Every structure is written in C-alpha cells, then in structure tokens.
Image (cartoon, rainbow, N blue to C red; front, side):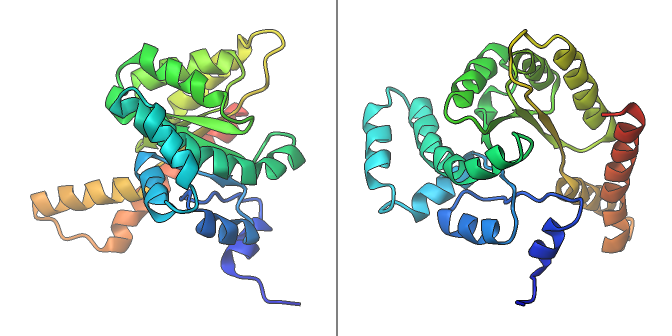
Length: 239
C-alpha cells in the first residue's frame, strides 16, 4: 500500500479540507489528496487565468469580447475559472448529498458595503453551478445579504473574520435565516471563515508598534484561541 501524504491522512479524520486555488493542475493534485472544496477570490481567479490562457483560450475570448464594462469582464473571467472548478467538485457534492464539494465565488470586494449589488451578484453566481458557495464579507452588509440568500436556499461563505463575535454573528444570523427559509428552497449552507494568518499579521504589527517582543509561537496562539472559542460556542449552540 502506498504511504499517504499528510493531506490524504487529514482527509481520513473528522476534518474536511478545502483547496485554496483554482488552477486546474493544482486542483487535480488536491483532489487526489482528498480535498472536498475549493475557495477562490478575484486574485486567485486572475492568477489561474494568467497561467491557463491557452487552455481557456476560447472562453476567455468570449468573456472579454462580450463584457460591456471592466467589472463585467472581471466577473466573466471569474466565471470561467469558478465553473471549471465546480465541474470537478460536483461529483463530491453529489456523493455527499450537498454537504461538501462546494466552490467559492466571491462578490466584488469594491462593493463590500453595497447590499443590493452584492445580493444581485450572489444570485447570479448561484446560477453558475449547483455547488457554488457565494463568498461575502463578514461585515454588517455581508451578513444582511447572507440572510437574504439563505432564505432562498443559497449556500454562502462569510470570510475575513478575525474575532469570535464575527463568527458567532455568522452562525446566529444563518440560523435565523434558515428558520425563515422559503418553502421548497434548497437547504443551503453557510461556511464561517476565520483568517488565523491575517490575525497573526495584525498582532505582529501591533507588537512591533508597541515595542513588545513576542515569539512567533506566542502570536499564533491568539488565532488558535479564536478558533477554539468559536468552535466551542458553535457546539454549545448546536450549530
């Protein structure tokens, strides 16, 4: 029997791991190692397009030629990348009954405070494939949009959370929206993301500004504490 790599071992534990890229070659390796989801963002999508111009020559040309504005062009190019990943993950989505196998499609970050624009984008993204998770900012506006989408059974991801209250707000608002889910709607999910690395970066800057010497291991404990406290609160609430 071939020895498992770390990710293949991880896939056999209660932890489910997602791949953080939409490049097809990377995604092939990730799926071989047990990935059950993919997260993308505009930067990752642009990177994938740049690395696969020949592979996606015709879809890219159609996206560029048919877009009436720069924003529309960016969305069309992102659709090329996201739908390719969604196609590869759809077997996982079907095999797990829609609990895994999702691919994130992020709304335009420059519209992070525009509820109507984000909701419109989210509904468009949901139509790209059955296993799309609409990625929204973990802000007041993003939470409002998440609720509106969840009522219609659309799966979402709340991203760039740094604190326990943000993650708890995502869970609470999702539960409230799920209770109002429209009759006949799908049972959409919500993935609450904690960005441990971003919190680490912030704390390093704070320590440097204050002239406080902190070991890197000490900094990392803060992010782990956020995750552990949020996880405990989710368990206590039955979320």
